[in-house]
Image 1 (cartoon, rainbow, N blue to C red):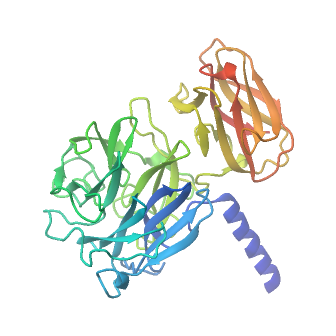
Image 2 (cartoon, rainbow, N blue to C red):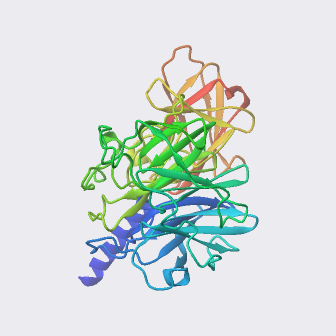
Amino acid sequence: MRFIFLLVSLFVMCAYWLHAQNPIVPDQGLNDPHIHIFEDMAYVYASHDKSVDNNMFIMEDWWVWSSPDLVNWTKRSVLNPKDTYIGKPYSRCWATDAAYKNGKYYWYFSEGNEQTGVMVSDTPVGPWTDPLGKPLLASDLTPTHEYDMAIYEENGDHYIIFGVWDYYIAKLNADMISLAEPPKKISINNPRGPYNRDGKNNEMPTDDKPFVHKFNGKYYLSWGCFYAMSDNLYGPYNYVDTIIKETSFAEGYESPTWPNGFLQGRHGSFFEWHNQSYFVYCDISQTGNRYFRDAFISYVHYKDNGEIATINVNGVGVGQYDVNMGYIEAEDYFDANNVRKTENVMGGFSISPNGSNSHVIYPNIQNIVSKKAIVFEVLSKTETEIEVREGNPSGKILATCRFSSNSTKAFRKESFNVKDLYNGQTICLVFKSASIKNLKINRFNFK
């Protein structure tokens, strides 16, 4: 009986890994994640809750994990506080971020909620050395607390953003371990936060863990799932919205939440890879313990006006798909070339080819082995064509799909026979020349 139980347990574990990749590293307490892409590999720099039995924040080291696909993760590096200027065991190893410049990698870390240090290495995963032997951002530098930093890079220059309630920004020198200017306070108009839902809490207007990224010429300052926008890196920023809402959650991922609700504690960062945008963030829906957090990843899509659409919070995550869960949204690709996303009349997003050699790739599609047809929801101005190929734009043709012209504004379903499917397959959609600026794909599925 014990052998049968072990077999059943192994089957359940395999099924979990096959169909769920949020959390990205289950049952490990990986949290406050920042993901960077170095040499076409994803690296997550994160803090680490010690135990699922924690009844307070106990974080004794920092971690680096890497992944080639955002699905399979490998622990690559552990940074112990005794190997930094802290010089001894320490239980408040808070959020980190990383950067690359001139052949060196820099890993910035929080000494609790007080100070920021920096380490340097020749590789993204160490070994790490402390070049200063003291904090980069000391606790008396500004009126806020100098922790939970983020690093923003633009045109070869790097900036550090940090603080709680009020945020500060400063340009780094070329050595990446000193400031080129005194920190400047970032102004946010009409801010909101998990403790300030109505805009009246002036003492705690935002949160800790700021992050800055840029998309299509606009700067985004975020704190968890709240964000503001600006035309200038230094601000002022105008508060916009949250990217997580009640409609975000798949069943089983909506609770439990933090004391101030599901908008609290979503520390994380935005990143881009293969022409796709993502948000990686903290979640406690699977652990039930605010002191033992997980890291999730969701796709990010930008509306035509620059605002960020509401994200989905589920167990499938990114970089893999399960056709038993319904349609695959076309904009949730893993890789794309010469393809653009646009809002559509369905209230979501579509993709369309924008030039020659346009294609999109969807890896690791599960539960398609018995399927015989691929069904698209499309809007085609003229007669257009795409090829469904295996793996990449040069892979084996699995189906040729010719869409008839449609003079209406409504998406139409069209089905095509498809062959040689197997579970875990990578599908590449290749747009032919007539499709350029004439075809929009909303979503697709296999039957």
